Length: 632
Image (tube, rainbow, N blue to C red; front, side):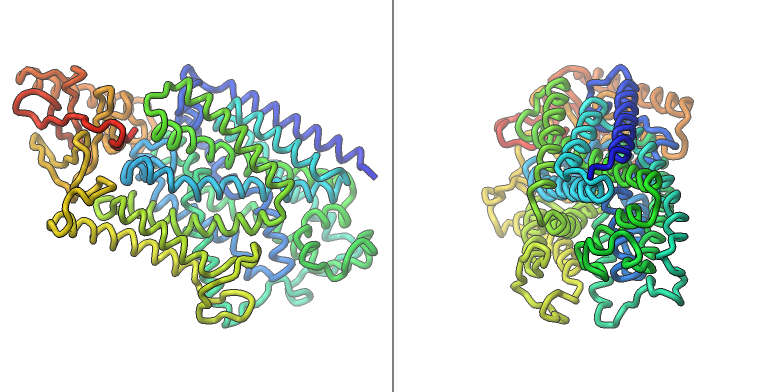
């Protein structure tokens, strides 16, 4: 029978979330229709909201439900997600947050396209997109199953309703709506689950949860050490290269704040997992024959029922009004994951695929409409998969592995070791990493392995083959980049064979420059790439003094004060005026469309420049506009 009280509770909760999402959409500033306003909330997310939305990167429906399931099934020692994802935020802050935010990127794919070109960036978009979409579908499917247990309504209705609300406020508010609804959603998760725990623990069917009375800690057998290590590395480093994380990093006011948010959110991940751990322990200590669940399923719970441990505890061990609070918590957790994933996938498509590959001259207005359509399409895809595909978790696990195996090694290279990688290495890494991962099989998708690694027990790989695939991918990008550079630069292969045009057969409208002071020197191996667009502009991520005509606020690494930002702006303007004066002496103007300077800033506070065009200058002419690499 349909539970009317539960439906009322869900409707009230959804209306609250919808109201907050619409209210947050109105916070967009004067550039409300710009890329940065919608995708990154104008890089103006405050500390309080930033902590909540960064924590919501991983604290979702799958996170809290999966934690309870793992405690019930294998024990605390195998519940690696809370600690793994917390460490992923710590390492993300240490290795990537500062550098990514300092460079003023807009999406996670920007550094890939900056280093490897637009088309290779588009290829790397595929595993990133699949991971975000399948993650959203998995969380929506979990929500539908949870609601059906507690409220007894059709799964399809609950999934569609939840998806529509998340898509609606994301469509109009962008990251503003996602961030501010995260605050409400995390509050509901924390409050809803903690309220239910005392009622569950004092239920007559529940015995003591002391580890000496019931084993919810679990054990780790020696033969599983390799697999345990593999899963841990997957969670820690595979949890970094996700747009859902980097959209929070890149929306921070400064690089230093992005790091702080990552570290605080790591603590938040562990804290938010505590109620789920206790709920899993309570389920382990419950005699289900003494509850209303008797006669409705297998006792002890089978694998399918174990996945529903959290909603079952709420339904059968707590009063109805308490279970509705817990249901709100699960719903909140799901939407906090789904909305950010949908926004992340749509942002990458609108900017890194549509704009940089197909429509380089697209206006901001056009990009915003493409993004809105992408939000709708991505949400519809995730909803459809949640309703029709029965192996969503298997698909998501496989895509998570591909993110770890393919994206993480290449992200590490382009952010920290850019001079040592090129497009050939990226292609080789992509193919080798993919084949190495698929070779191990995926039981959840009935994908049989074609390489049986040491420790194969007949049903699963106990060898850390995912981490092996990641290491092979990392070695491949370095080795093939160095090999192709040696072959082309030594003359062993003719320049015409450089089909990807990234070593010696570089298009004439791409110049690599490096240097310091007033000198400019060409350096193919160590230089950074600046690109002349068809409009006569130089757009370069690495130019940290000025970005797309605006000062990058992330340069202020130690403080967010307006005074220091103003000083930096004045310094940038003064440097630009000085450079223009120097160029004017030679008859060139920095503002002339055909005489734009290429500025390479390899170190903070160091600018080098030269004029493009004019007699005696390093002139470059675009002779192949269709094939040139354009970095926006």
